[in-house]
Length: 219
Ligand code: HEM
Image 1 (cartoon, rainbow, N blue to C red):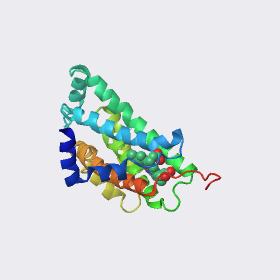
Image 2: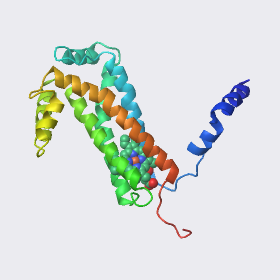
Image 3: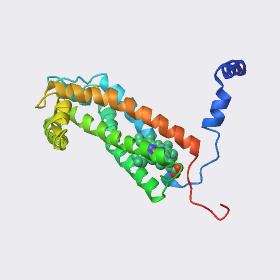
Image 4: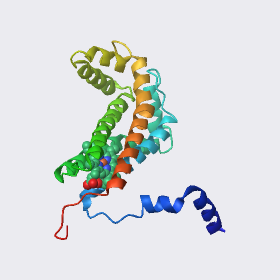
């Protein structure tokens, strides 16, 4: 019965072809350093899932943001765990993505034909840092408020376009409800969408070119 269902779907979707192209590939000749890309992917999914749970209770307004986080920590069953994973997962993801990039650099895997994989990777690193930056403001406590004040000021010191960037980030000259709304929207919609799209292209290129490896005697 299951085989019939599978065959029916396979004829229409090409499941077997998908499996062959995406998963049934030769095992990469790597070591533990080659697992960091997959670790980054795992952390992206983990952050997405825990983040979705957090939005059930989090309220992005200056009057309620801080209290909603306190409620998640003390009132919601396992809220502290979900927030803890999301909080530490964010730092871990930045570190893991960065070390993954260092590995790619040290093994010179950015060279032909993987230049585009590297460029997309640079976008991935910047977007991951952007996720951390926008997420930091959301608890709306003193540390978040002043860190974002300083962070946006630094962005504002870019020559010529600094003033525009500062106002675009803050939604005005000062930090306000608009800033919180913008950072929330960036954190849960814009940046994750960009990250998902970039990861999609990154993975497509990795499947297309296969994993690089140091040449052996046979090579
Ligand atoms: C969210 C961030 C990222 C995810 C999810 C991700 C995912 C992956 C995965 C699953 C692999 C294959 C396994 C491996 O080699 O570890 C890989 C390889 C690669 N990644 Fe990333 N990556 C990310 C960030 C980056 C960054 C920041 C760079 C560089 C700027 C980069 C450049 C590359 C390159 C050039 C390869 C091919 C390596 C090879 O063939 O040896 N990636 N990535």
